[in-house]
Image 1 (tube, one colour):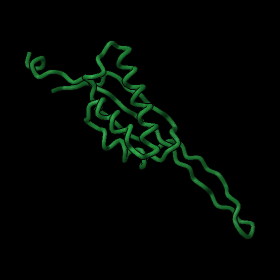
Image 2 (cartoon, one colour; image 1 turned 60 degrees about the horizontal axis):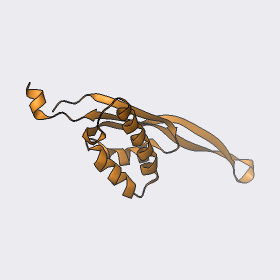
Image 3 (spheres, helix red, strand yellow; image 1 turned 30 degrees about the vertical axis):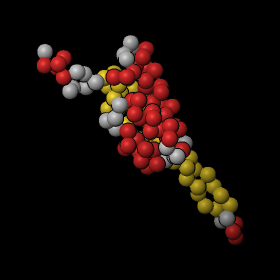
Image 4 (cartoon, helix red, strand yellow; image 1 turned 180 degrees about the vertical axis):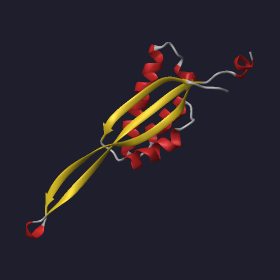
Length: 121
């Protein structure tokens, strides 16, 4: 079963840390798209909502190319580090501390599952 990337979707600067997003993405790598959508709909994580929207976008990209969505598999799912928002918070005695808000770039690449008989040809 050889697979190549047929569609891809990227959400840049998603307001969630890469570590929290990658915890959810780790569960989806290599799984069929229908199974992944089912899992994301019942997951109690903020990242699941964001990732579900990115996955829907990747599926729509594949449908634009005329590919059947039931044959799609998640080949690549990663969360890279995005920009960091920095804000200052006033503290006691005239001091200030920096608040860091991490963002992430979420990438999902889908591939089409090929039948074993087609590969033998």
